[in-house]
Length: 399
Ligand code: PLP
Image (cartoon, rainbow, N blue to C red; front, side, top):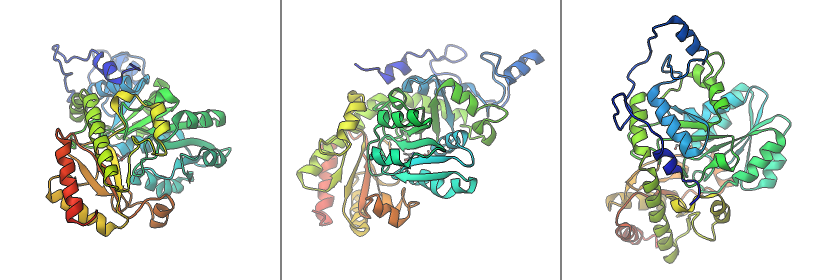
């Protein structure tokens, strides 16, 4: 078996104050010291094991960060109040006025909006490219390119980024590779493939319960320390800290992630096979004819499968809406944004999570008005779920 991210988490010895099997929740914003010097040393990062103030480090957040770093194979990690804050803080830590970023055109809509609408206020330019076209990526590089930004499996088109190839382009040009691995935790380990920084929306698969919004940054200790430097660290100064109660609950959920990813992938592959049989236009990277199949197979940890995201294209939003409403009625899952939940979620990406992307760019990147993205749940009887979907497809005269 390849490096096993789950065993790496399980092998951590994280106990509470009294030997509790779950680490204690640190319910404090500040920490007291018996000696003033220790406080000064802690301020300068020179007192091992001491905590100063919870916007900087909190023991509960440290446990979750250490577990995520163990999963990712990075020296360090830091958890944030949302996936967006993980993404934006990393970008603002690495880029300044006058810098240039190359980004995949298909990223999560919020990320796209940040890159396209917000960064120009600070004189940071972004070139959007088809991230699977390595020639286009190389051609987009400028002397001031500081970063290539991509998602391992892009939202919502499920394109696959060739991380080793992108890393090579970055190294050659002195840029950093930042990868959002939200769709493929455990399946792909971007850091081991050459990414410099890995970001997550923990809100999705990693927490898996849809009860909170959270994010994470995994990278070298040097980068994390820069990010939380008290004088000029972006995360320390913008303050996107995660609440320790949430860290504690996410840490518990992280310990079942390996089982959940396998089941999400199994169920999505089952539906892909059925969609194929009835001739639906669909997109799933697990299928051999998917343009990113070979790249994903080369990068992935096979035991976790090809992921829980699958989409179908009904061409118009009217048809998509009709089918989604029927599927909600027939208990296929919920008509809702987000992903990685134990129930199946489905939404029309162009009208929801990618609605920040202007219509003409949606067209350019090949995002159909009728695209329904499914985040396939943990259904124990996926055959029954398929029968319900089939019934909905027939009732709405989709097939
Ligand atoms: N990255 C991806 C791939 C996403 O799909 C999302 C949200 O949908 C985010 C980041 C943002 O995460 P959050 O909602 O936790 O801020």
